Amino acid sequence: MNSARMIFKYWLKSRKFFILEFIFLLFSTICYTLTPIFIGRMVGVLDPYLPVSANITGVLFNFFMVLLFALLRYFFNRLARLKGAEVSSRAVYHLRDDISNAIYRQTFSYFDKTETGQLISRATSDIEETQQIFGMGLTLGLQSTLQISGITFGFFIFSFDLSFILLVAIFISFMLSYYIAKKLKPIFLETRDSFGDLTNTIRENIVGTQVVRMFSTQNKELQKFKKNNDRFYKASVNSVKYNSLYMPSIYIVMGFLMISTLFIGGSRFINGTLNLDTIIILLSYVAALGFPLMVLGQIMLVYIQADAALTRVRDVLNSSPDIKDVPDAIPITKMKGEIEFNNISFGYTQDHRILKNISFTVPAGKKLAILGTTGSGKSTIINLIPRFYEANEGTIKIDKRDIRKYILKDLRKNIGIVSQETFLFNKSIAENISYGKDNASKEEIIEAAKIADLHDFIITLPKKYDSIVGERGTRLSGGQKQRLSIARALLIKPKILILDDSTSSVDVETEYNIQQALTRIMKGITSIIITQRISTIRGADYIIILDRGRVVGYGTHDELISSNVLYKQIYETLYQKQKSKIKIEEIE
Image (cartoon, rainbow, N blue to C red; front, side, top):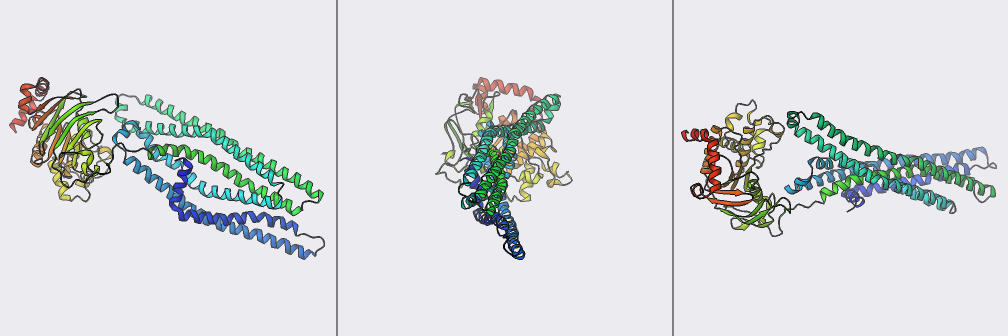
């Protein structure tokens, strides 16, 4: 779909108002086209052989007709603008809605390869850039087209021969618009891309402000910003260079048309083949043609500017998610939680596999601990279970059924995830805990907070559960954020619970309390835990050892400690680091 079809598609979202606007503009154009006729007749009615009173009467009649048509034009134009505002506002509203939905439906792989700043720019400033074409473009574009058509029709009626000059002038204007628009299109695209890079630079500096200040690289970041800002500035200036050519050129064309009409019309008047009032009517048409020609040319430039923005917006709208429901997907009425990996291979890129032929089974209600060296694919495994990514080879089954056969929304509703990098919304503690469950009761929220060992802290706050956590949870410590994230996952009462090193930021006593509470509530829940804590590893029903994307060990702690060299090395290393913590837990 090109930009023109896209614009009309969104205009027609308000078809009723669009048609009404067209009708009002049509009536306005009729008035606009008839006005020069009465201007010419003000001269044409003058007759030296008639009494002065008769001449005055004729002039006044035509004058009042001109005034009447001016008032009618004002009336119809106002109605058209009101309907046009409705059409344009709804068009932008639907476009914003569509791009938001398009972003929300994308999979993790899309965000891996698309810069956040570029997405923000497309969803905000690029949409803002289209408002002129949806608003002014519709009303003035339709109005100018109808006016040019009406004036051309009038020229043909009053002087068929002179209409040829008019058509030449209109053709030159359109070709000039086309030439300038063609030159401006790549410049406007560069403007939008450079603005997206500028937005991304600002976003990175805000999000990474702690790192920037830690390494004192403010000057380096300012230089990066200046580079992107200069690029945006140069593109903007280049666009003005071409844009400024149009208006002076139209003045030259209009001047040529006016002189030609006067010269040819005057010659024919002298020869007696053309009346004076007809010449005045034609000159009035020429004067009336200036405004729609200028506007239409500007609309063409506005369209090219909007086209650059809409091209970037379409990239998002046309992006199809890699992961979606299959046509025969079934709902999940009740999940037991058995997980089975069969020869799973996966890579974030086609030429590099992170996981290679992974196979294991976790019976329903059992606890699986995943251990491995850095980069061995631990987090990747848990990202495949809720279908954040799709395996390249093999199948993953839950309750003996391929997870691709389940409705995606149902699958994820039954899986609770606490990731290592906790994200919190700038809302209250209660709203963050209940994020995954609509209409959660206060009792459920408190119970989840108690299990996560967070309740005692919350009640010390002035607003308690209504306390705002700040953007990304900045008003909480790392451990408090992790515990809140655990409470959020527990509130939905998942059948499968995934913990990705979720207690790494809490102290030993807090971790012990959380583990004890989790042990009570995790009966009947299948849990997968990525951890470096000895106590958690020993408490797991099964343990998987990963090395370079392959399973090199699977079994219980007792089985692996006696038969698997890598597990023994990892376990002994962790034991030496956590000796004091283990003793505390044993005392507890």
